[in-house]
Length: 398
Ligand code: BEZ
Image (cartoon, rainbow, N blue to C red; front, side):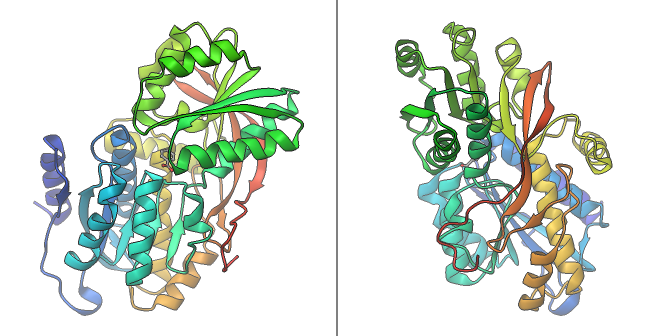
């Protein structure tokens, strides 16, 4: 059995029965110098409402590294995997385990903004490289931005802002927003509000419920009473599935258009079924993009996993691609930090979403697409905002 096969096999075994909290795979002998393995610490949700998101990120990071023969900058790669359970209260302890106990060269994570901000603090305190493959917390590439912190996904503000523009551009005037009561929900709604208000609309009410609560009935009753012209939401994973179904079951879909950040319908369509048909969302990925890279990636991801790719898989793959670019430039020497960071900063990522570069704050500058659900696809409709950069408020590097 090759080392990589062993990694795959043991990871599968572990993740099968997991109530697992922290699982270190391959506490392998770590030789010194250039022949030592590069340790990637994958801190992701493998259980809970965001489990499917974490799994796709994990497998797509490995796909990108696998395409390089399992090496980065000429060095073999070792993975250390930890289930963060999307639990902010355990974020710092978990990240510290990877940094101080496992001595990873790169922290990679996570999905949930609250957990990601705990990782940002640990990465900052220990000067560890951190790559964020999903969580859109504004501060990670805003007030808390740092040379060692990179994000390959989006800021929560970006898709929200794009949908606010689309809605205002259609002449909508009265909206209500719904989300979970944590950073991602608030920032997504703030992005929507900023563009919607600038375009002449009014966000009349913001309704929040605790993460990961899915008791939506009281909120749906309130929406029915308020009768807005549209409802903007941020939900993802299992919560998105439930919200879309409940919204349709409450009879609101026909009378009050439901729009959202694209996480509402990404990776969820099979479970949402008829209830999702026709929904419009904005995101930095869509089905039907005409990029050779996208076609190749989707085929490769399907072959490797037996599943269709979604935005989370794309982000994981691009995290791998950013590592490939950075480590190639320093020939695998993770200690050559200045050159490593410089190479990552100037990388142009040939992403399945379309090529993108990173802003000075280390967040993707990327097109935001308007998509519409058709069957099992979030079909590309148009570019809602071209090359949208997060404002990076409070970032001293920007
Ligand atoms: C977040 O917490 O930032 C987040 C979670 C799931 C999807 C998108 C963003």
